[in-house]
Image (cartoon, rainbow, N blue to C red; front, side, top):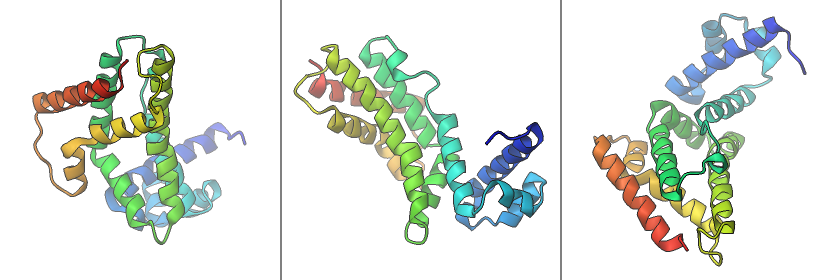
Length: 201
């Protein structure tokens, strides 16, 4: 469905307002509050998004789209150590934002009452990012850079979890470990080295 410029603008206003309120207040945000912040009528909100679930899912996918890597990993021709380090640094920095934290908490808190929200978050965020990394690792495996006999599916998940680190784990539990830039880079560099010690051919 192709929207008129005016309708497309209103849809964008709704998404921006919903994203802001969902980030600040979680799923408890009302459609009335979203309409008020977006400066549109409640009827206009429902004309674009039939339910709050649909609006939340769209916001999650939109946020994941804006935070994904600007350049695909497959297009990066540098040494694998540099590619993985920059990927790890960008990924951890994204996970440490309040926006990413609040979206994650909202999806988890609504797991029992709105399981589709968690599924939408999983598909648009973790699954998509892991698949992007997996495609890169499989490409490196075909080039003979990584061990041919090892599972890149396992490798992708292991690397993703490794680069969360204490900083992200503690952050999800409400504690900022006050990680310095130097400490962050040292941890991620050692993670890349440990990963490649196990997988590099």
